[in-house]
Amino acid sequence: MFIELVDALRCPRPHEESWLVVSAERLVARHILEGTLGCPVCMAEYAIHDGVVDFSAGARQLVAASVPPSAEQAMRLAAFLGLDDAQGFATLMGAWGAHAIELRGMVDCPIMLIDPPADVDAAPGLSIIRTAGPLPLAAGSTRGLAIDLPDLHGDHAERVASAVRATRAKGRVVGPASLPIPAELHELARDEQHWVAEREAARSPLVTLKRRDQGSD
Image (cartoon, rainbow, N blue to C red; front, side):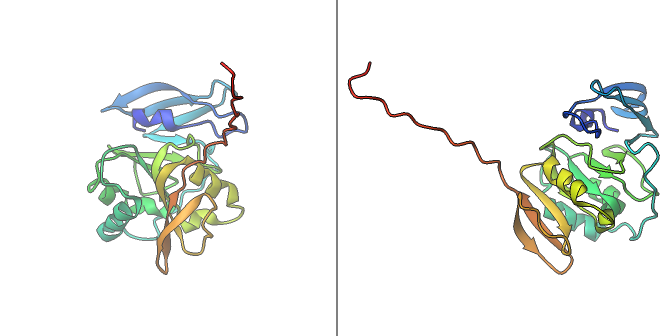
């Protein structure tokens, strides 16, 4: 886990959004390989082992890669998510993680992998978290996010909603064509397999204007 991305992580338990406190036991090149994340609100602890943060308490079942790594798919991802500078970090869910090494070689920003295939390991520039529920990311923290169809088995509404919430305003989200585009997103393009959308900026609250009486100071 890249230490600079810890600030983007949040406790997934049902209470007010809270940052996490990190205790690093082994740190190499600003990546935490062994350690613990703790929540100051509910006192929950989440282990970091071999660079992977486990928010699932071991409940998440690892799956083998369904597709081989592809430089072409990585290039498509870079274009879909607009990863043309080093600002912020990108997030890939599920099987998209199979292309993470190729993508990391093409872009300058760090990459967060949510439940990637079992044969994908954490590496410089690649951080991995395992979770069995909503994404444990702060609102508006990621510059772009790719949703994977296998992550959508069962009741996926909360997981998708948390993915959208974690994407910053004007950030891009890639989703499977079978998934309806969430209301917070504006579609930019689509093909038979995927759509690309942009997170709309939050509307500012209306301001009530008061008329100033003539003759008042």
